[in-house]
Image (cartoon, rainbow, N blue to C red):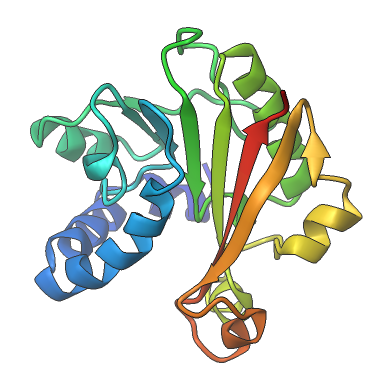
Length: 205
């Protein structure tokens, strides 16, 4: 296990995430970011890389979080949220433990940028979602300043990246919505670290 993995899977990392999740001011601010995601959620959802549960706790009944850090899973379970460990896969995700036609949406918030081959990870994920009967996939990625602020980020994902890698349509899905927040202007991401892009894929047909 690398030092980065030890950090992500460790108790100290989990504790920091839990403290941030409980902070009243941070929780209030985060609620505005989460609310815009919820507008596009259809039915019970999978929150892939759910962290301390800021999105998971507001998803429809029957939703589930998937997380690599066992201490965060322990905390989520203690709070009465449904969570399971992420299965290892060289492509980044493994959804084989999930039942078909149980979930309508998959949320991938601030995860994709951590992969070298982000477009291939996303393509594989869309493929698996199609087989599971998931019709909506929502991805959230940081703007430019937010991307540069974290040394564990490996791929800057924006609409140009998705177009260049032919990801506007893929595996039976197509992009139906994309927007920036706060302020729906890409240039804000050059100045503000907490600026982000949300992209919504829907199943074609």
